[in-house]
Image 1 (cartoon, rainbow, N blue to C red):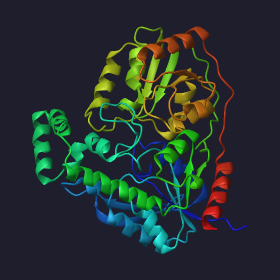
Image 2 (tube, helix red, strand yellow; image 1 turned 60 degrees about the vertical axis):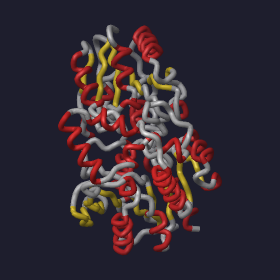
Image 3 (cartoon, rainbow, N blue to C red; image 1 turned 180 degrees about the vertical axis):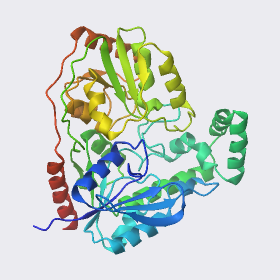
Image 4 (cartoon, helix red, strand yellow; image 1 turned 90 degrees about the vertical axis):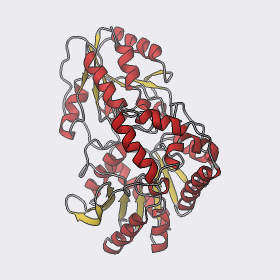
Length: 425
């Protein structure tokens, strides 16, 4: 049987950026194994499309947003659609495997479909139905689903973006009042023009979804949510587990001293690292934080402030973004992995890595975490008190290791081949 070849499209790549998330790392590992081409976008540059060689062909469109971008520029990116056509003309592929729309725009599925190549879309988060990507509102509360008025109120300052507002924002940043200014704009009443912009984004997303032949979701939770909002035909959504990008080969060292809790992930409010820091204060333990500090909409400087707090607290350590060759030692040198997320996580790579290392897990009961780690110690999200009690339980139980789990890449690739074949037929 002929092996089908896919073109993977994703919003970033570890080959061009540091601090990439699980989605980008998954695509990199997948393409490194299969040799299939990848198309991505670098958010700076003059609009050139370049091909990088290596373990797989990496096509990079180097183009940033306009100097004073409007809201539409975040989801309507004709240059990306043109780049896709160029790559399809040069790469002999059977299917387009789309992994994200962020910084790529809605229109890629329709472009590929018009070119005659079927499209499979991997659901990694909620970006396609949520401007913020995590179904989390401005006040950090979880959102039940999109609507024109609710979405407009949530991202109002972005809907008002334009040359004048961008100029004012630069002045506000210099004066140190940028957050105050943005909050003031966000409190204004929504206007018909604001609702129209949200309506346009929703329409663009649904239009591109109509050109997708099959959807893959790593968790039942995300699949059910997408069915509930009615964005895609439920008959075209399939649950397919993700692989472990790289297995663990090293042996866990013999640890001594206080229990060591590990957090790996972006230092943003919805990942809950601040709850872990608060919960661990005064306990007989050490807490290690690893991850980037990206900007988080509505909360500028949040990650940097958390890093400063970590460095001030006794027994807390911040290690920055670790490299792939450091991964095994970091996990093996921990006793318990903690995922105190407050948004509905899908199926995070960090959790797979912790389970593959044999670590016990403390996690919030949200999203698909319980599907992946049913034996974890679960806590309600947003509760530092419950998390502290969970940490105390782990300290009382003492050090231990669970059987290592694995999600082989080879089996996953074979499953993808079956999905590709179904999409083509």
